[in-house]
Length: 240
Image: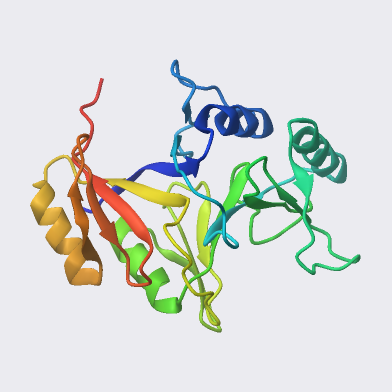
């Protein structure tokens, strides 16, 4: 048994404000405290907004690629994001690019992909968590989550859960230097029938490292993947 993706933690200077922005863009319901975007179906993951104090110093290691059903749907997503406080972002994509690059109110990058993209054809609204990273880290996460590789070419990799949903992709070299703690981090849950320490040991055997931050009040063990990206693992939540 392997860990499951429990949630995506999204660091924000104003978690409530950013949660409302992304709830509006993605069309997801917020939790009672307004800090968690609930999954729309079984193939989606919660997005948990947490406090992150400090300026943004460069592009995020991970960003959302949002899908579109039609040209009109793409335009509507862009318009909704702009109305909610997003803005256009120039990263050198050029006038002929079919995807639209935007930033949320805290300058986190994301893309709205044109309809008909074959790579994102079998995904949800968040088509991919598009990441800066090595081929080796793609292999690590495939084994860590038990998600098969759905792309492995020219040192670019991507994985997807067997039941579908968002892909996680890594662009290969050159990998940008790490400029601080990542704002977007994966939170894992250990298998229900597994000891937490045993799962931590398994992840270490795959190439992860245990962080000096140790275990927090919620029981999450802080770790880093082979590229140095922060993530956490905790005991599985009891089923209701």
